[in-house]
Image (tube, rainbow, N blue to C red):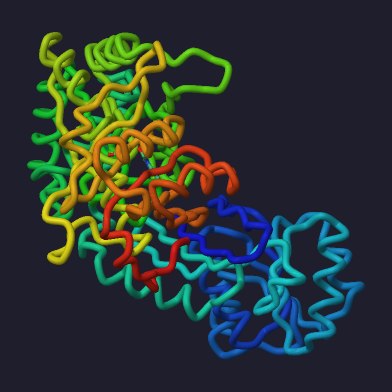
Amino acid sequence: MVMHTSSSQTSWFPIVLRLQDAHVLVIGGGNVAANKVQLLVPTGAKVEVLSASLTPELQRLSESGAITHVLADVSAHDVQKRLAHCRLVYVATNDAALNRELAALCQAANVPVCAVDDPAISSFITPALSIRGAVQIAVSTGGAAPVLARRLRARIEEILPAGLHKLAEFMQSKRLSLREHVPNTSERRQIWERFLDGKGQHLALEGNVQAAEQELEHLTQTQQTQGEVWLVGAGPGNPDLLTLAALRLMQDADTVLYDNLVGPDILNYVRRDAERVFVGKQRNRHTLPQEGINDELIRRAKAGERVLRLKGGDPFIFGRGGEEMEALVAAGVPFRIVPGISAANGCAAYAGIPLTHRDCAQACLFITGHARADGTLELAWDKIALRGQTVVIYMGLNMLPFLCEKLQEHGLPADWPAALVERGTTAQQRVFEGTLTTLPALATTHKVTSPTLVIIGEVVRHRVIPTQDIQ
Ligand code: SAH
């Protein structure tokens, strides 16, 4: 696992490097160099330390043959002639100018170099490491804040189970044989996940290899061939508003079917190697019809995939979750449903508009403003145009002038408060307050685009801008 929180524009690229038998040159023989050497020795690298003196610890390593010490005053010439066969170089003398000169030399020769404590002149940096057998956790802040990286590492270490190295060792020992028995990658992954979710994990953590083997065998024989579908609400756009259940399923899914409302910020949390299928509406292209989506969900689940149907907001609020659920029932495909924060809740909270209020709104109505194919929109206007209630309109932007007019026709005053929330909860959120009379013009003037939520009612007057940060 690599956590990376670089704030700079360019981002460092975390990899895990094999150093067995590779020459690694460490320049400097003080404590800083000794720290790096300690990390390097267990990798099987051929570590050469170039310096005029050594710490007692390095001295001991040199005497035991774990490292080679080249006794010399460090010079560019000495370094230059060694570069040809070096896989990596650490520069750790206590002379900053010399460090810079040597790092530049390595860079010019294209040899990866880490000048300790000086990321600006380094081509690689060493993360804060936590090692438990085969499991290595590296936390990097891209050199921005090493202290923070170490803090984070400490917090991660607190939650690591004690026998983690045994678990990793067990899984490694079974990798090849399981691959032979179960050639299909996705099935194999599912077996391991069931192993980790169940008692297998605990047995292996305790080092009870025999029982763990039996459990793995059992799981291999009782393989799930039927996949499932998870209808999951991803909330209105800000990843902070994902539920823990959504996050877990996003990490477990084989495939994700998502549409327009699910942006890259959210997709970022989906398991890296899950297949991503866009099924939303695209400009100038037809929407994949709902039946097409249903068929795709069913086809994939029947092929054994765990399919995540990720929807903006909540799946059961103008999300066609009901139709998908019915199709899955008819096809006999198992499914789960995870609610999400709907646009109404998210936008109201982030815009600071309460949806109900003791003083003025005892009810709140969610309606759709989406017109039929023939351009008409027929709603129960008498029930909508009421005082004492808030009306939230989803997909109401296109028909906004018509909607505002109808509500006035059916009894609401021309100065009845109303607001637009564009891209609510995200960093691009914009809120416009007006009335039934002014709202359509506000939308045009400010070039408001979808997704936008319309909130109508006296609650808009109670708006207070919240202090929460939107990232
Ligand atoms: N299932 C979704 C709604 C889908 S309908 C939910 O529960 O939120 C799509 C409409 O939702 C959009 O046209 C818009 O009116 C509204 N919407 C969704 N996300 C939004 C957001 N971040 N900001 C404003 N409106 C949003």
